[in-house]
Length: 131
Image (cartoon, rainbow, N blue to C red):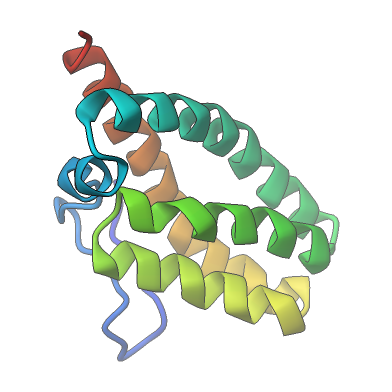
């Protein structure tokens, strides 16, 4: 993962190697590792499909479509991510509600590698925690 640089002088930037995924949050919220893993499988499928769709929407100038997809991601990241990741997703999703694609695109460009790393982390967690 590359560092995210967003927005300048904010507390939202994610540094390389910083923890993004925190399964303890989800296990506590869901009550068990098994329940959490079931949610993760759905999230994995959804996130893997949403990332290219967000990029495609923004490239087409459709911030509204990107906003809807980001809204879905914003809904589940609090179950598995650190507070900084949640804040980052919330920020980009919030901007995408009112700004054009030209404003959202650079923000998403910083968020995308974070979400791609989250995919890798989820895949690894599922692979290493089979019951």
